[in-house]
Length: 130
Image (tube, rainbow, N blue to C red):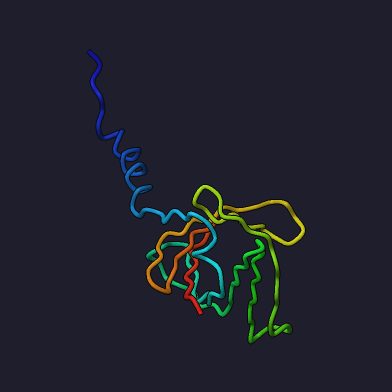
């Protein structure tokens, strides 16, 4: 009979359970997103240090997402970018950049009242409904 070395299995078990540390909010359609949102902070970890940002996202019913970023230190005070988005399989799938058909999937980690936390490829985004 072969014995299982539980010490060697611990890292795999930790990774398995860490993936369930928070449950994503599954979106049914874009109705919960429509309108303007203030993007107030971003972070590489959900519970890590947050970088304050000054941007806004506007989800439109026609499948366009308008992002307006404000940079008080740069040459361009405000930059507006429009990309396409869809809600599919409970996720927000949005274009990575305008004109390219490459999409990234973002999940809503938490949505309470007028606040929402979205996890995209490498970043957590903290939004508040305007």
